[in-house]
Each structure stands twice: as C-alpha cells, then as structure tokens.
Length: 396
Length: 154
Ligand SMILES: [Zn+2]
Image (tube, rainbow over all chains, first blue to last red; front, top):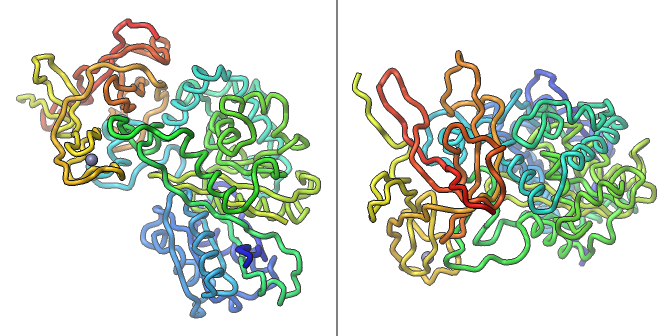
C-alpha cells in the first residue's frame, strides 16, 4: 500500500503588513487553494487549522475559526499548535486522517497577523513558563539565539559575515521573482553589511521580519485524486514531526540551559539533522534525490546549518555551498526558491504550509521565473519552539 | 525606603556556597541516574533511560565553564524584561557557557562592562552574583547570576 497522499490545491494570501485579522488571510488562502483544486468548500469533509497564540481565542481554535469564516458546513475539525511547526503538524494530522480512511479530502489552513518587532511571550506573570523566564531573567529574544548559533559557526567552522550575507543576497534574488513575497527587491552584500547589528554578529538583513500572511493546501487520497481526473498529482511522501533525544546538548529556544551529560552520553548528530533524517527514511529517498529544498531561514547563518542538517553537504561545509552558488536558483540544488523567510518574514502557523505550497508549484512546473527545471523531489525543513520537528517530502 | 535583595527566581542560585566559595548556581541531581537539571527540576527526572525511583536533590553547579557562544542585544527586548523606557538603551552581552562538570550549556548575561569584544569561544568564565534591576516603587533589588571572564585562554 502506498503511503502517498495527493496535493490537489495550494494557495496563499500574500505576505506583508496588511493590518487585518489572521482569519481573513486564512480564508483567502483557503479559497485560493480550493479553486486551485477545482473543489467547493462543501466537498471538503475535514479541516485542520494551524493555531496562532495571537488574536485571543479564535487563534487557539483556528480550525473552527476558519471553518466558520468559510461557512459552517459540518466538516470534521482539528486545531493544532506547535509554534513554527504548527503547519507541519496540521499537514501531519490531515495525512493521518486520509491514510486512515477517515477523510478523502482535507483542507489545511494556517495564517497569522504578527506584531512588529521582537516576538514576546504571552502576557501575565508566568514564572513556570520557560518562554516567559528567558525574557524576564535574560532579555533573550529570538535573534539572540540566532546570534549565538552564528557566532558558534564562525568559531567552529570559520564562517564569515560575508558568507551569511550571501544567503540574504541569494534569497532576496529568488524572492524578487515571487509575487507572494513581502520583500521583492534584490539585496546586495553591502546592504547587509551596512544594516544595523541586532544581535552580534547578525545584522537586521540577516534576520527575518515578522509578517502577516496565510497559506493553505487541499490534500486528498490518491484514489480521490484519480476520481477527479488528476492522474499524476504532486504527492506528499513523508511528514516528520520528531522530538529531540535526551540529552539535548545544543541550546535551543526558549531554554536557558541544555541537558547535562552526566547520566547519558549524547548521541552523534543534531536534533535538526534528525528531523530531516526521519523524513528521508519515511520517504525512502535521500538528499541526493532532491531537486530543491525549502528551509527555515530565521537567520542567514541558520540556513547554512540546515544545508548540513538536510544532508546537502558535510557538517561545517554549508558556507562552501553558498559560496559555490550550489543553493542559488540555477545551482545544483536550489534552496529557498520561494525567497524563504528572508523574503516572506514569519507568519508562524502559515510558514510550514507555505513551504509545501512552494514545493507543489515547483514540482508541477508552474513556479514561473523561479522554476527549477524538471523538479522531481523536494524537502521542507523547519523547527518549532519547545522541540517540535517539521519536515515534509514531496515528489512528482 | 529599605532595599530588599530578592533573587529574580527563587532557588536557582545561592550567595552562600556550601564550601564558603560564595555565589553558585543551584540545580538538582537525580540519585538514580546522576542526571543534573538547571533550571532545577524538582518533580521528576527527565532522563528517559533513568531506572526510576530517584530523589532529586539540590546540588551546586560548577563555578566555572567555557564559552560555547556569545552575542548581545542591541535593541531593547520586550516585557517582561525590565528596562527604563526613558533611558537610552544600553546593550547587554549574553554568553552561553558549557559548565565544567555537568557538560550542560547555561545562558546568562555577563557582568556589566564586558562586551562581545572581550569574549571568545572556548575562553574560561566564572559565575558571580549580580543585580538584574531595581524596583524603585518597592525597593526590591532583583538579584541574578552573571558570567565574568577569568582570563583563562581557549
Ligand atoms: Zn534519573
């Protein structure tokens, strides 16, 4: 039995700062995805919403909120929260329902209306919450963690500020070709170097912005796709949502400390690498099969780490890859052909879904000026706060 | 107004070390598997391989460690970090330190005056007490831990 499911439709609301509710972005993305699939909302018997902690209760119950905005029609509903991995968990829940035979076709939606500036923890005094504590005790923002990773790479692998800037230059060039991206202007290395330092060694243009945006997918069983006359759809072959293994030795958001190694020797390899490994194992393919990848470039330096973690190169060789142009459009294995978070910004519950939208368009051959010729397989990689893995493998 | 020194989080550090060494971070240690936790874990051992039935006892952590990485905050962080919005923002320096005995990495601010230019990955630092902020309304001086370079090389 094949474990594939079909991507019948993909849709987004353009990223930006639009000043409207996340519900509006999600509804627009959902309707675009439904139209792309050639389906009516009333044809869909299950909806999965990726939650946002903002916007109060409607954000916590996004599945029902989107269902109400589209018009109540009695569909099964699911709401999932996993921070930046919420979108992947939504896809994972939809896939499980399809493979279990609970639903033929499922609508997956994620959207956000993010505040400007640093993300902050939910309000109130909550000293039991690690996310609250890292701000109260240390003032440690998300970019502070990105700065720690970047500085560590410079010390251990010899990465330079110019290597980091090159990632922004590459992603901005791809984003300039994407009408759904928030930033559509090419960026030069000089502009990155001239931007203000936020968290040493990272500058403003090394770090992704916060944004509004929405993304949606219509997923179905292979039988349902065939019954609709779609013989050769883009297929999702794997969804990885793994957690870390103890002891976790790399400091990660939102923790103040890692695990001790006094009881158990750490296993080789990083948590981020294990996210991709689980997806490859499930899909039965490897990095050598990839035509492209979408990875979570919260910072330029972090994108280089993902190259290593998804197996495009050995540990420490990420910078070499970007220097060679291997991950740029036209390179051996383009990464973030959409423009990435560098061009989109973060709309947290939408982003992992948006990554799969980009894979879908690339694998269909409809990605326009940023098309990777003959794309056959792609992976998305992402990570959610508190140890949520997220990777999706799609093939054609 | 009388000023009261209060730890920003209770039970995470002591200024009276067991051996008279002064300031120490405090964690807990599982008696069944020897796993150490910081911030302290008092309810259960988080090692999945732990044989179980251990007691979690308070333990002082290594007073020294090596710099794993470092950064700074050039922009004012949001609440609940406390800073005077009227005063110009003074960047703080953050350092992630791999503790000698526990092999765990602990994040902290450096003592005031230490910038990223004074740090290097692998350099030795020690933990000392410091003041996070003072609340003029209540007279509370919120104390915390800080890291300070010892001058030991990488
Ligand atoms: Zn134990």
